[in-house]
Length: 330
Ligand SMILES: Nc1ncnc2c1ncn2[C@@H]1O[C@H](COP(=O)(O)OP(=O)(O)OP(=O)(O)O)[C@@H](O)[C@H]1O
Ligand SMILES: O=P(O)(O)OC[C@H]1O[C@H](OP(=O)(O)OP(=O)(O)O)[C@H](O)[C@@H]1O
Ligand SMILES: [Mg+2]
Image (cartoon, rainbow, N blue to C red):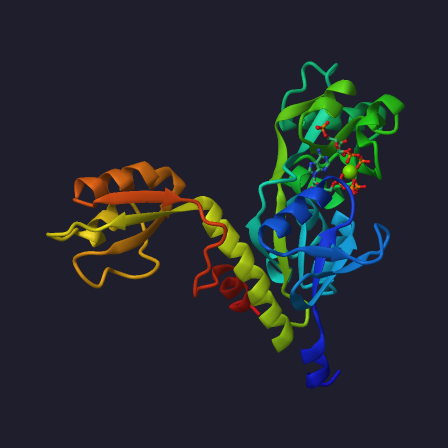
């Protein structure tokens, strides 16, 4: 491929096409002013970002997204951290987890039958497994689709006498069906585990996962794709900054001055438009939502004639921390 071909290639953004991550993911992009436009219908697995050329959206399953970020077939994607850690042999070398998204929360756990009342933790499980091996010549069977996470975790806990039965769905049913003794699976409310008379071991939490925005280090990052990256991540950061902060405007006193630097420092506020030019006038600060009342109080105390606080939709800034962090690694 020539350099000019590479420059014309779009940034590939992989978005969940189904399951519980789908709706949340498109709502997340929508809030950031990135409207996903799917092709002809729900079965068209390609689309665009309205108003952002040079981006191609691909709708894939959450596990396929992890695989495509690993191989470099996609530049950016939304998927569960569980799938990233399960699918990628070298997470740090293959991808950058840019930011957790606050949805798709689930925990990968080791669960055993509730009837095993003496088995409370991994060391109890180790005894059961060793006993099965010596007394019955059989190995404890673990049903899971998280084969790699299971192997790593069991090795860390020193449990070796087991074998994995790969499960592609309804994993929690495996013990009752007789195809495995225990399971490693994901849980959110715990309803599925209870319904199948399973319990989580006390130290059986393998990973707490949520959906993440993930970038591939293996994808071809030409100039066009880097520019598209800055646009996309700039909007995401602008929405996040806006959502987590408040804009505080203060009318400065007619006489005397306010020591804004000290007040801003105390309340971890910024002056996004700089310091006031004269003694009188209006000043704009930005602070964390939780600090709003203290900051407003301090400004009034210091002589401000009026203070207003508001939410903003987007807060853009010259710095693009998400993009810079990734670009520094490419
Ligand atoms: N209660 C939950 N159960 C399963 N996954 C969840 C849950 N909550 C969040 N997730 C996240 O969503 C990801 C995809 O799961 P989901 O069930 O939505 O997809 P799916 O399309 O059904 O995939 P699969 O068919 O492989 O289960 C999970 O790997 C996990 O990161
Ligand atoms: O702790 P809970 O809130 O009960 O959720 C956990 C269940 O949800 C998921 O299954 P899903 O509904 O995605 O079906 P699947 O196995 O076909 O993917 C997961 O595999 C568990 O079975
Ligand atoms: Mg599922």
